[in-house]
Image 1: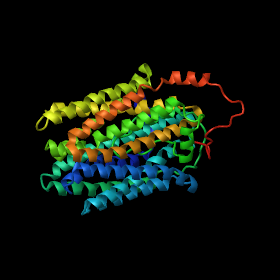
Image 2: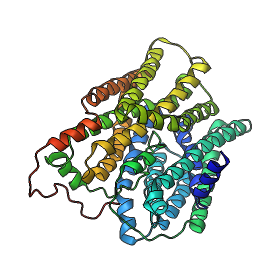
Image 3: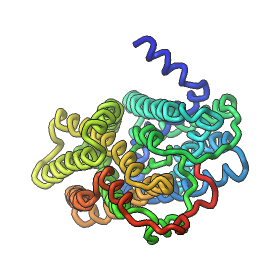
Image 4: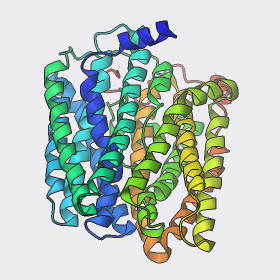
Length: 462
């Protein structure tokens, strides 16, 4: 045990403290921003859906920009420093914002620049390193970020509980934004001092092991920042890969379609969830932080369990199982909202959030690994980049869809819609072959002797 702990400490570099601090701030904001929509600006879950879609769109655009820009200027470090500094400015401005429109714009700015750090941080970890160490380095970085996220939820809940004894709830929320701005500014300072300079380096490599390291601790809501190295995302190449016979295999296309539907379903449930607790169940803001802390604990605890189960049962079975559990969870919540009154028992909310977090690790890890295994070697990096892009696009769709359904029939209708989409995703997923079957079909396909690659990469993929 001591040797294992020592090995992990050796893998943790000094500049990870900046990443840790930045994730503390973002972890706190993941609950704080939805609370501000309701408690400060008096808006409904429909407005929260719009805000979430706008933030996801900004992040998606950022994910298509920052990697390429960092390549062209041959720099990594300035993008992380600028990202954390922009986060500091956004949080400080939000703490004094006077309208919902200002909150939307500042949150878009926050997510656009947050992606800059996520898209480049992994590259700093692996560049100029031996390839055999990549997976461990990326996994450790993700672990640092996840623990930071959890600590942010704990600190946010503690501060708001204490502040509410002396301040109105709206002022307590603004105080937390102010502290977040200070924390993000400190993260920018530490990043400028501690992050090493690296020489941009890109090589072709196999993606499967790295995919397993990357898929562990990504978060729901608007934070599908690309914690991956597959940032060379070319829209024309994507279109050719989808339409050309020698592009993506049919099973890969169907799985990516199922992925988009699944993320839309998850967003339709996850986006209104914080406001359900404060509006429908009349819970205090401190309780909202507590329940999302429980969810994050479930995510962290489940990751090693999910990895072992994938090895035993296979990616496809784990993916289907995780979605089936969420069908039951989301469906049970919708039924309770239709027939129940008031808040459910505390133990039921705790169990629901814990299950919500546990199933996320199973879903995300199996999804990233399944994308890697279903795709052909020559377009595996593109498939993984498209997986993340579809996750963001699904969340954008969910924000708009949940807002519409909330306006028509409240939380119950939005959650019922998420169940319907999950069932549709499962139906498509059932048509996706197991990776072993997909490889056998690919090997048995007749090939043209002089055929050129259908989707040549303009530059070598990392």
